[in-house]
Length: 337
Image 1 (cartoon, rainbow, N blue to C red):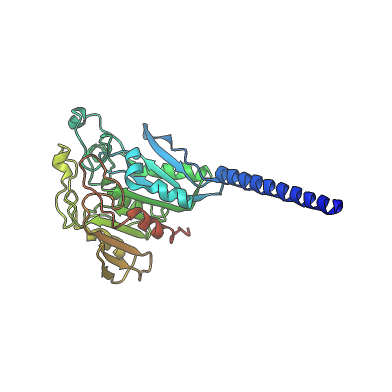
Image 2: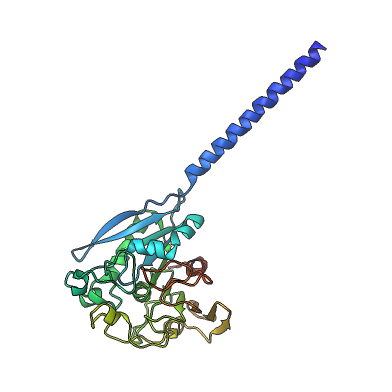
């Protein structure tokens, strides 16, 4: 009997030890898992381009992995990098799929009279800095001052690749409005270094030169846009910024963005489909790279699925998530040269 009781006590002790060890092991694994979670620093970095100090925010969710995909997100005219973080929701997707998001800042003209009066930008964010990009025919002081934003973004790419964090074959560019126009320009002038672009509620002007190489393009416009008219014509931002030289050309119809890339990517006829959410045109039979165009229903001058760009700006539709859709497109493409 005594031997049996001893064996029972031994078994009980073993079970207790194993239970404690299992709990401790699970706790250690949870802690290790938390330690491995990707962390975004959100630090502001600086570069000097043509004697001008330029800044950009880096949110790195790649963790301990090697070089990772990088998405460059360009704010709208009148916005800023932090505004783009909030507006697009790209950090949520980057944290889940472990890649890098970079949010550059445009430039501000010190001689902008409306800016000195505290005016509000129509294309940007909560903190009204009136930062803009020189997209060629738009916008405001960046265009008037011939700011070399192509060199700036090229230098950002170089710095991130040189750091070992960004994969040079998986660099993607998106942007809102003036930032979308800049995305087109970067696609044209840095096409051998950018794997795909995704302009949102932007435009082309109809006189763009050919790109250096084919570039996959995912283009989103708002069917109800009152700032960048889907049918083409003058931009509302001219009078809103109090600067008639904010853009020196009318914009082409929205579909011209896709037609430009389809033509230079060597594409055939598009396939058009309509859903309750959007009218989609897709050029998939291409010698160079595919093009997808969404005219999103019920969406004005806003980032579909995101947040309004500023107080009083149009509310984005929740039926179409531009960030998720373009990331799904980006993941299919990388540069091979």
